[in-house]
Every structure is written in structure tokens, then in C-alpha cells.
Length: 327
Image 1 (cartoon, helix red, strand yellow):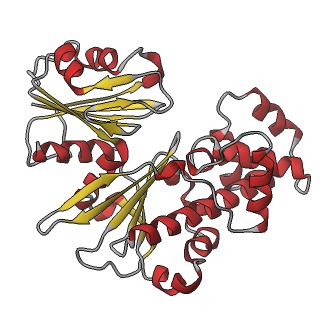
Image 2: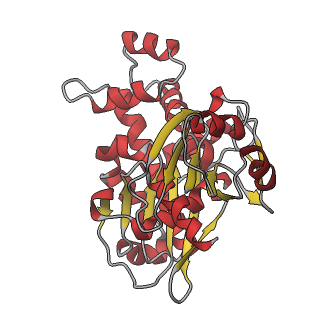
């Protein structure tokens, strides 16, 4: 019996599998709000309450770097340790891996229906591929062909400094640097990005903010759904929300292109996380692909690199389960 988890700052998904031949049909699964629990142990114990299966292995994809079996979870006050988890959960073997590493592990197991293609390109056989994810934060991982299989490697590329690719994005960076010391993709490409871009565009004053929407925005603890809904309204889209999503798509395209170059990911780039599937019309656009391709001498190369959005919300669990085959 294998227990797997996909931990994020907002929610943690958990599942139990009984077969190493099928990681798409769990015996049990649940999503729990991460911040509600004082530790990963408490969250997992809550999930396992009343479950009769004897767990023999566990793999948790966690949001943060894993060093020697230990991790400090990004955006949560949790520290986790494989050996302590084994003892507290009474599970013989527990492994921690980075959540983006788990997502990269899932890619070879994904089906066509799990993906939305932004750029068809031509995937080079056995070439490296990269994975980025936009959710509460922004993460990066990559996979290299090891002769008979792909080996996934984590990174902390989300903390790389934001690099503007348009004059408007340069103004955005200047504005943000007045308020914070470090502006990175984990900030702008994740959950904080949309409200930050929205507020910047509002302050510029070139696009008016509807009064009723301003009241909703000010009262909301999480304005992201409001911004997305305002931009995607089929009858009366809010111009300021539309502009926000276009800037966000351009920023995402820029960093995806950067990652493709850094990893020479001619096997493709896969965009995961909770935000991209919700804003597909803005990602399947000229804003994203322009920024993706705008890399000078290698622009033509990037035109051939496949770019896909991962639609399957369980991809992180599938990847964590796939990692168990290497234990």
C-alpha cells in the first residue's frame, strides 16, 4: 500500500494506491487545506483516520528544497523530516521530494487528454524537458534521459529575479522594487502576481476601474478568482482584468522561454499548477508565445519547442507515485 501526497501552501492532495501498474485510480483520495494543520504529520493522520489499509511506503511532494531527507516548506510554518515522519506515522519507508520534481516524474505518464497544447513544435526524442508550475508560488524542474528512463531533477528557479521583456513590464519591476527588495517569478508568476499586476495597472491610471469591482476587490481576501472571472466574462469583460491577464501571460511566456533555453528543453516545456488551466484563453494567445520566442538568436529554435499546459489536477500525485518505483 502506497500513500502519496502533493503538498502546496493552499492545499495538500493525498491518495492511496495498491498497484504499481496503475497510478491513475487510487483506493482513497482527498484534498485538505494545508494551513489548517500545524504539521504534515497532523494532516496525514487526519486523512488516515478510519482507513484500514496498512501503509508500507509513502512519498510526499513538498513545496520547497529537500536536503538529506529534510525540508522547510515554502509559505507554511512546517519543517519535515523523513525519519521523523516514519516514526510519527508508523510507515516503514517515507520519502520527500520537491513538488516540481514530482510533477516532472508524472510527465511521461500523462495522456493526450491531460494536456492542452499551446505550441505544437517538434519534440526531440530523448531530449531534456522542463516543467514549470504557477499556483500559490512558481516552481521549475527538469528531466534528463538516463539511457532507459527520464530522471527528474528539482530546482529553485522560481526564486530567480524577474526579467522584464517589455517597457510596461520594466515599469512594473521598478514599481515593485520600491516596495520590496526581491522581485522574483515565485511572486509575479504565482498567486501574488495577478493582484500585483492589477494594482500596478490601476495606479498607472490609463484604464478605469469599475466602482463596483473596486469594492469587491478591496473586500476580498483572495482577489485572484475575481480578476480571472472579470477577464473571462463573456458578456462584459472588465478591461482592467483583461489587461492584467495579458501582462501575466506575457510574463509567464518570458520565463517559460528562459527555462526552455536554460535546460535546452527541446523535449518540450510543460506548464502545471492551479492557475494556467483557469486562464487558457489568455495563455493560448500572442502575448505568451511572443514572450516565449523573443530570445534573440535562438528565437527560431524556440518556435520548434512544444509547450503544453497540464490539465490533470492529479499530476503531482501521479508523479509522486511514480517516484516510488525508484525506492
